[in-house]
Image (cartoon, rainbow, N blue to C red; front, side, top):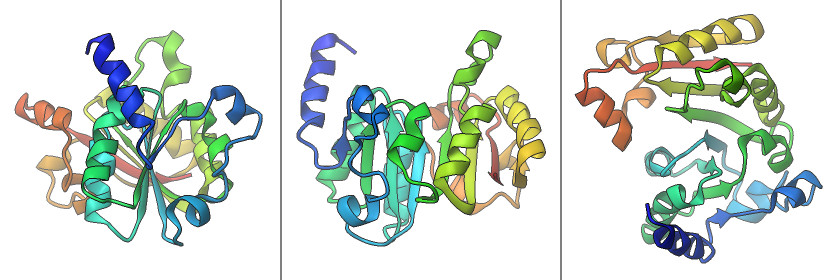
Length: 222
């Protein structure tokens, strides 16, 4: 994507009612305005809140929002030029149960109050295979602790990935600190796969399926 396109998308994001782009320093100082107030001040309802972490283009967030209009959905990613597509679609289609935050995922506890979130989705994240990148892995124990903080008790985390490495790594970590509710290394070749895990496919997921890659999925509590 050219720099002109990125700038155009950044400017357009600023006009969308469903996009929040806080400064990192203000978030760290505790100045994020919606922490603890998402239902009251942003969505203006008392519906459950579901996050998608590393939401990319926002496809999954938007699809889940269409599928469950009675639930509030928030996509989080540091790359606003990517989720511009999802934010724009939500605006054009009048989806009032969708929001996006441009921030780092490690700041999640600064953006949500304890127990404010009902579920978390992690869809096709970078597995960060190199050892030096481990801390950036979205199922690293430090981040799982952060998710546990913002989730309601027994709130679900969903992980969907084409990476057998990340699937196995997460399975090992969660087995020690949480509870695996369901796990399978090839959900499209498994008759008992939860419908919520197979009902939505992103652009990249469809590519993986065309390449005959197995899609893994697990859901767990922390």
